[in-house]
Length: 387
Ligand SMILES: Cc1cc2nc3c(=O)[nH]c(=O)nc-3n(C[C@H](O)[C@H](O)[C@H](O)COP(=O)(O)OP(=O)(O)OC[C@H]3O[C@@H](n4cnc5c(N)ncnc54)[C@H](O)[C@@H]3O)c2cc1C
Image 1: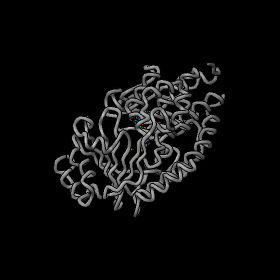
Image 2: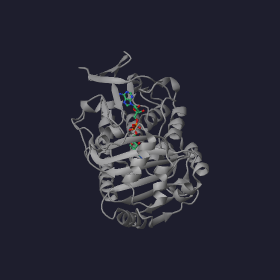
Image 3: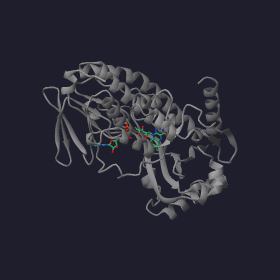
Image 4: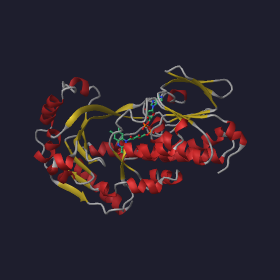
């Protein structure tokens, strides 16, 4: 695959080796365009990569096809992970969907497995681990100076921020900052669930289980490594995780106090809390303003969460990050001027990402409203009738 001489001389840096940054590096590489990827983590093995992600047909899967990785993805994906159960706090079942094997538009893959797939596909010498970007400074000639915590400095024609929710590059383009969505979560795992907790594993099935009531939720999801990842969700004021008095460094006491918060929930649901092992991690969920745009500036742009952080309730975050990567890469391939390529990507991205951000915001409000299980059932039935 060919590229122009002018483009070969352009130095492109991608900051962040998450799903967005890696997909971008991979697709550029397939078209003969080199980019350097800077990642703050010290090595590919340095962090647990978290839970399972559903990869959508028209976005994440499309990007994987463009990256030449779809067949490998298909072999790793868990189509049965599309099982979905919806309950209220009494244990009443509203939806009980069993997925067909190798069918469906949204198969699951563990975040760590997806990252390995992408990492193995890019030239290893293009990824610079242990490079924590501190600052990006616009220079008079339209280039940017990138400064890293370890003292490294680079000058690039284009810097693409794929550095996630709290991007260090975003302030060059907009004053908008992520705002608290009103939702706080506590994340924990049930290791080796099929063997250690067969009753919970059977109850949870092979995919996701949502139990919703009283502006709270117990959300369970089987991962490919046999763990069930659980989020306890609370629609609550921002400071609650600090003021609730739960000592998050003492897991047994955390369990005791959390069981009190769910004391009138069905035993089958409280069992998720009783069976937790390992750390119990508090986290707040943030979002950028829906429909965020900025005035185009030469030599810098954003993809993924850096551009349009949203709550996880449209299941779009990783899919949009990968679609952005695809659109940005193909635009660079198609335009001889990288700034024209960035502008074209940005205009396209604003249109599709704002729709997902609206959907995600509406879903979050619905999922934690009164009678949430019944309302979510109606919404999902409408979706099945008119996808
Ligand atoms: C609880 C929860 C559940 C979720 N569930 C889903 C789901 O089911 N489906 C879905 O689609 N999405 C889900 N998401 C969202 C999804 O995880 C993100 O949208 C997606 O990971 C965004 O990809 P990204 O590449 O833009 O950023 P990230 O995955 O955040 O990657 C950013 C990378 O940049 C690196 N980095 C950050 N700062 C710097 C710096 N200064 N210098 C160098 N490197 C840096 C980070 O170490 C990281 O590797 C969920 C999110 C949360 C919080």
